[in-house]
Length: 286
Image 1 (cartoon, rainbow, N blue to C red):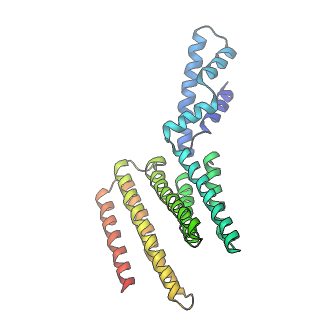
Image 2 (image 1 turned 135 degrees about the vertical axis):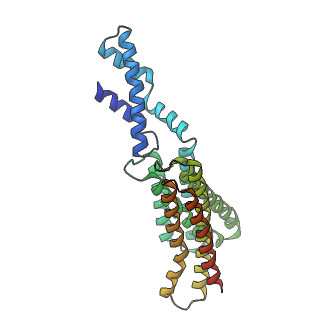
């Protein structure tokens, strides 16, 4: 009986996007409900086999129950991820084909990378892999997707006006959607079990994601400007990664401090992080 119930609940839980720990907790909770239903049916006089059958039948279809749980735990998340992946693939192929037919050449490297990341987002949404660290994996894909969307928007802008304007607007919408999903994934969908101060953790995540996006945008802009005027690529280009490295280190420190309950130290590091990054950017612009 135990194995039958576990297989049944496993099919339900597979429909949700939780990490391994969350799925384990959900499995235990659902199994508890199923066992309770089974025991109630036995008390009503049903045989062992019939009670098992009715308990699972009353529980509902595995896939349907799983979808309902997914929607309850992560409202519209799967739909949003699927929409992002689908819209991205539409934009990628449209831009590539228009480049190919109107200019005679196209960015095959961008096509391959962009399709790969969009396909990965689509695959992980439809078939979650519990062994992966969900937040890091999804955010990594979303950030990579956002960077490729920026490059894609530049390619779209280079097309004829009739195609350029709608595709550029479309690419900006996709980029904004990616950023929104980064916020949602980090702050709401996959909170860390190590953080007991949830409100402060959300605040720290929001601040750091915002700072990270600003730092990344400025770093890319300065790198682009440097490459335009530089005669050759030099090792000094690595200097443009300093603010990002500083941001990543201080972000990690903040989360560690918050996990140990040291709120004042956490916000002190947040303020220091902000000042460091401003100082580095000011030095760059001198």
